[in-house]
Length: 287
Image: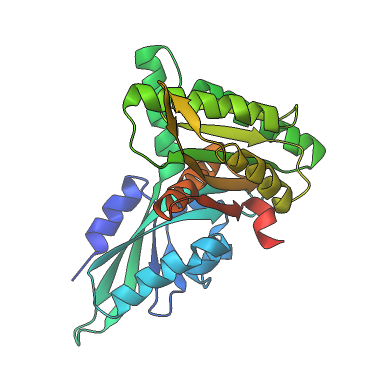
C-alpha cells in the first residue's frame, strides 16, 4: 500500500504523525508531531514510543504495539499523557495502524496523534461562548489557584474526585445525601483545602500545601471516613460509601489532565465498590 499521498495530506493539514519501526522506535515524524510532544525532531528520531509518556501509561502503548505486530487488529488506540522536556504534559490519543510488507509481516507502524487536552479546551471555550459560562467554573478556578500556589511554594497539590456508591437513589435524594456528606467533609478538612460540588452525586476536593503523595492519601482517608455513619434521607436511614480517585501534581501538568486522571481513578474505585486509587503526576511520578 502506498501511503505517500495520504501522509503528504496529513502534513499539509498540520496533523501530528510519525512512523515507528517494528521495534517501536520512531523512524520519522512531521513538525506537528514534534510540537505535540514538546520536543525537537532530532530528540525524537530513534526514541522508543513508550519513552514519550508517563510510566503509568507505557503499557497502553506496549499493548497497542503487540496487537498490531501480532496482526490481532489493523488499528489500535492508546490514550496517554505525553511529557515535554520542560516536564509539562498533555493528554493525547495515539491512533496506530500497521503497514505490512509483501510477505504480510509488519514493516512499520503509522501513528497519528490527537491532542485531547486542546480539544477539551476548545469545547470549554465554545460552551462558554454559547452559555456565558465556562465548564465547571468553580473547579477550574480552584485548580488554577492550587496550581499557582504549588508553582510558588514547591508543595504539591491534589485533586480528589469522590463519588457515592451504595443503594440506588433518585436524583433529588442523591443530591440531598451528597450535600450531607459534603457538610461532614468540610469539618474534616484543613482550612486551606476546598470542597467543590460540580455534578450530581459527586464532588471534588482540592488539597493544597501537601508534602507528598502520602499526605494526599491521608486527606482522602478523612474524607472517606465521613461515610462511615449513615445519613438520614426523608426519614429513612441510608448507608452510603464513597469511592475516590486522587491525582497529585507538582504544578507541571495541565489541569485538564489532572481532572481526567482523578476521574478515571475514581471510576475504577467505584467499579471495585469503594476505597481509593492514587496516581502521582509530573516529576512526582518519577520519585
